[in-house]
Length: 172
Image (cartoon, rainbow, N blue to C red):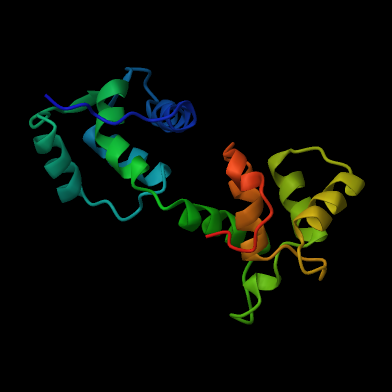
């Protein structure tokens, strides 16, 4: 008998959103093709059909043509728990900062203008003053841009770990 690891509520909500998006017929199940798309929607673009088949076999679901929400959660849980948080934060940073012409400049970092553009695109309503304050608070070196390390520090603070609130230069 073994205890299976569980997802936190935020991760469960993420899986539920992907599941609901792909359950276009309202059957409360996903076929194998949709399960692969679910993995993709959750950020696991590297998964192949053979991986899905292996997962089904390992989870005693071989021969299933469709999986319920709980069955999908069961097979994606190890992938979600194995995510590298720094890599995930880096992907978000890159989306906001945009492409870089110089590999050493983090795409120019996250400026007020870039942050404002993203907020408008996703429908977040912040005043210019609030956005400037966000950039100023996160910008440790005072260059007017939030670099990758600054962004990582801010995102770690959001994790709810009180130790993350301590000011430290060793944020690894």
